[in-house]
Length: 179
Image 1: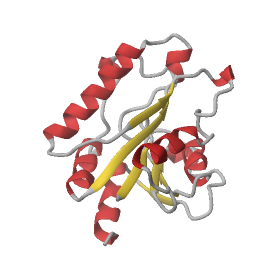
Image 2 (image 1 turned 30 degrees about the vertical axis):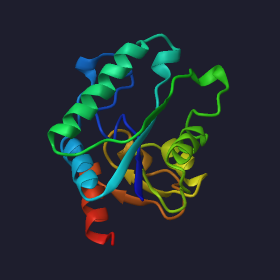
Image 3 (image 1 turned 135 degrees about the horizontal axis):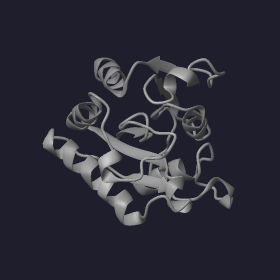
C-alpha cells in the first residue's frame, strides 16, 4: 500500500488564525484537490490527520466539520480521485488527549485502520507539530510553504524534512520518483 498522510488546514485548504469555522470559510488551496486526485489515481491511499480544536473550543460543531470533510471528498471525487480516512483531534489544547499533534495518536489511528506500519510513509504538513507527529511514528516529513509553512521553514525541522512550495509540488515529486 502506498499511503500518504496530509494535514488539512494550510496544506489542503486555506488556514486562519481565527479558525475555519464554516463551510464557506473552507477554501481549497490552488492545486490541492487536483494533487489529492492525482495521487489517488496513481494508486496512493490519501489520509488526513488534522487538529480541530475549534470543536473543543465551541467555535463550530461536528455537523459543520463533517460538511467541510464532505465537501473535500466531493471535490476530490469530481477530479476522479478518492480520499481515504480522515481523522481529527476535537480537543482543546488543555484537554490532555493523546491525539493532538505533535502527539502521535492520529497517526496511530491511521496505522490501525489500514493495518500498516508508518515507516517511511510521507506526511505533509505546514507546521512543526505536523512533522513531529509523523516523525514520531517513522513517517518521512514533507513541509509545504503554504499556510504556516513559510514561517515554519525557518525553524529547526526534523532531520530529513523535504520542503516544497505546495501539496501539488509534493504530489508531482512523489509521482515522478515513486516506483
